[in-house]
Length: 150
Image (tube, rainbow, N blue to C red; front, side, top):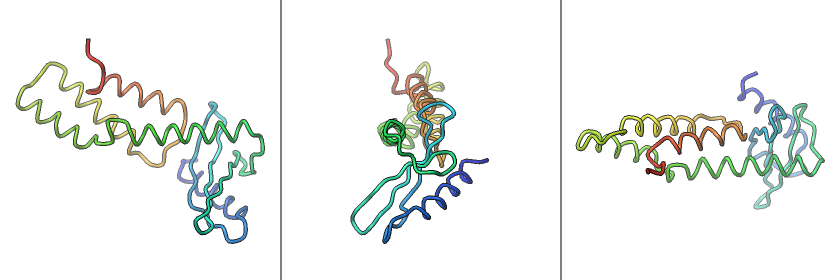
């Protein structure tokens, strides 16, 4: 099932579990452990926020470690998405293109390709928060224009 459909089903289940006066604010999918899908659901009640983790069958997770692992991988992936490439990948790609046209330094094509791949990886919603996604972002950062040079 596509991730968009999974998220819609999780959202429907979360709405049924909402407390009185709570509105579902969002649902994010996570796999802290390979093959173990969870859904982090955020609820709003006025200015107050509350959170619930659902398992694959859309049941509330009560196991503290799984809740913590789910929230942690979601938070780290969101932080990586916000900060990778300084949050300015489109501008970085324009600068790389300009640099290629004016100076043509060695490796510029690889840097442009890595920046584009990173931008696509970060911009593809919805995202499954997982160690594999973080590894891919890290690989692209190491291969691209932000990579350390010898």
